Length: 184
Image 1: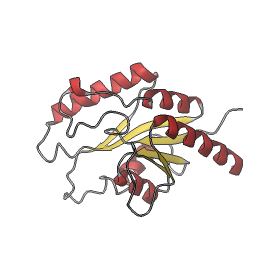
Image 2 (image 1 turned 30 degrees about the horizontal axis):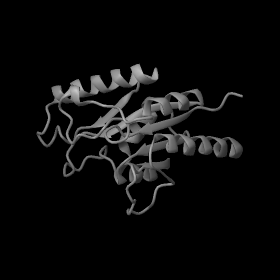
Image 3 (image 1 turned 90 degrees about the vertical axis):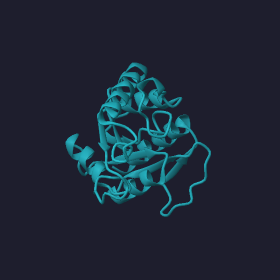
Image 4 (image 1 turned 90 degrees about the horizontal axis):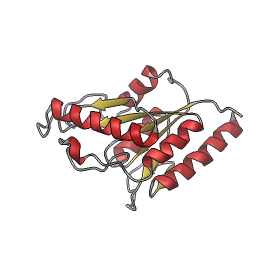
């Protein structure tokens, strides 16, 4: 039975690719184990995936726009090769003190992705490894999954679910889909 599509927003660094600080070298891009496989399976179940990521290294002068673009291109290419999914990406290049509205934990970046992809007002899930991902998701009204990598979550409000790794996130997403379908 076909399922209604839903928006699957994900952070990039620490969620889909290994977080190396301020990534400036495309040769350092490594995918998080299980991420590509889980996203590929979620697409089969109706997910429309996209990346929403703060990239303050640009504003901080730690990386150039050209370096950021080279890392982005390498990430998108590696992810597509591993998953068969070409990810649209939405980035906030501003620093934490810039006062912008697109920097997570504010929800504007999520709103931009939803609007651009035609999912404004649709069911949304966000998966991220930082409290800012959870807080942005909560402000947006998304179902939030914190990818903990074994760490404790201490912020308020808490995420809707905590997954230690991508296989656990996949299981949580599958349960969310069942619950969403039952309440539809």
